[in-house]
Image (tube, rainbow, N blue to C red; front, side):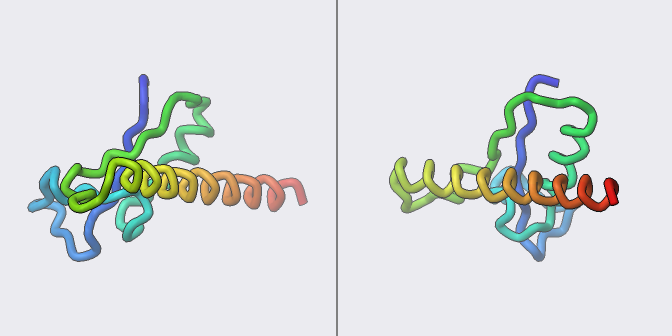
Length: 95
């Protein structure tokens, strides 16, 4: 596996009708369980890149800097959440 792309979907999305334009930043609605996927892949030994895969339409009206900041914040939150959950699981299993 060369890389992992993560995105979210609108809360009211019908999976059979989802299009590329529906891709949101990870964590926007938590419809897609990205943290579970990241944790599972890490447990399998995955150490590759994790990138946000929101559609460009999600950034309409934003500057490039704002888009980069929003994306970085979403990825930081996802990875922090994943790390925190993994640490809690490890602590619980060591007791």
